[in-house]
Image 1: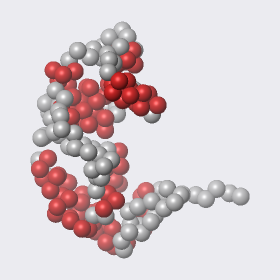
Image 2: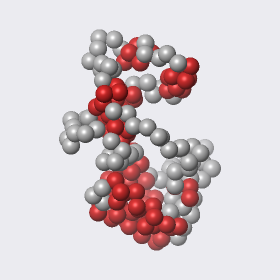
Image 3: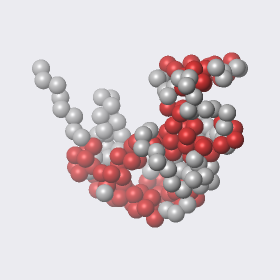
Length: 182
């Protein structure tokens, strides 16, 4: 039996499928009518393009209100507010140019049971090397320009951690959707 071919993101967008995932983790669960989904997506991208500040981006949720399905709003149980910032000074001691491997640099600085637990989860997920991009983002959070070409979402997350008032969080889905939009 031949495998069922999945439609690509562009095809779903062009056909106007709503946002969501079915049991096969396939983007096609209709939450809204086709034309509503397209109109909402175009309105969101328009609001993003017009945004000049983090406050502008934050206000998109309020501007769109109930039209954004609750599934796509950050759940405070899964994403509780981070009540801290990490400054460049906080991580200055982490030398990314060291002869040691990055994993060795991190693991040699782990002291508390909570740090060990966080390290273990990152290790289990294969995310240890992502920290170096986050660290670089924190160190460059106040800079206007960067030469970062890899792991942009983690780098930008670091910039957000270092300067929440002026740096947004982005992810691969936003980038991919925006590329399809343009």
